[in-house]
Length: 415
Image (cartoon, rainbow, N blue to C red; front, top):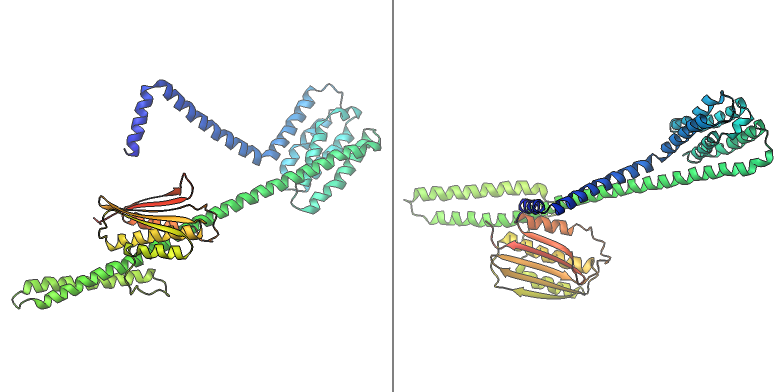
């Protein structure tokens, strides 16, 4: 059943069972909710400093509105502006936190002693100290210490408190500085890791596309050698038959001459087009392309390389078109190469099965996949391209009993 048929069948089953339909809807809503939660968490993490500043501003407003302390009303604008100043920290990395400390000093100047009972101006100053600690420029970050301690000393004096309290109050500012420094470092590391992951993903995609392009070019070159040989044989045979005709067979001679000229023109065009794909160091193949006829030699080479390999031939062998034969050979070659170089395998098995107008190929091993072959990892991409050319089927993956298996089914003829 195709995908559309399965979807319609599932929909009909759900319509027949309302409980299943409700469960499916609940699962869909649950997935949507999780996506929204993940987006919100990611947004909150990226905007945490701004959210904190907004919280400090809101807290200041609430504190000014509900407190019964008889503070001087002149402190209201000073207190309200101390938090929002930090929103300008990206444009003014030094000026914004320094202005918040200046607002705290001005707050202590214009308020009476009762203003000491207001907490949020102090919290805003702690936020400014964390902003200094998070600064990218170290000279700006370290400048926060003298500014903070000078402001604290001035505020203590204005509120008629002993200077002996400066050390433990200063401890809060030191802690805030290190919190800002730590959070910025973590944020920087996270951003670097994200950029590195995106760069690696982009490089992997580029390499995969390059591998596909190179493999397609290689397939085209090999098919050129195969098809070129066949067309050459056709052209030679047509020329030979034309010379054997009687003088009165003029129409047959013209038809064969047309076949001969068309074949030569096709060969010329193929050489011109595929010549663009062929590397300068490559030359056209002067020997027959490999085929399943030589699969026993592949197995023997695998044994010589130290991999205990067994070959199983099932069914009645049939002649395969040259392109399919070459693809089957390359499939077995790639499977054994992976088992030797990359899978750290000790045993492997190659199965060639002829059945119902197709040939099935299996290469399985007992490897762990932790070999140190150092390959590019794109061999399977090439095999997938080759199998797709002839409309075959390919599967690859780990085996339940351990090891890895490559399996392909190719048609025994080209339609």
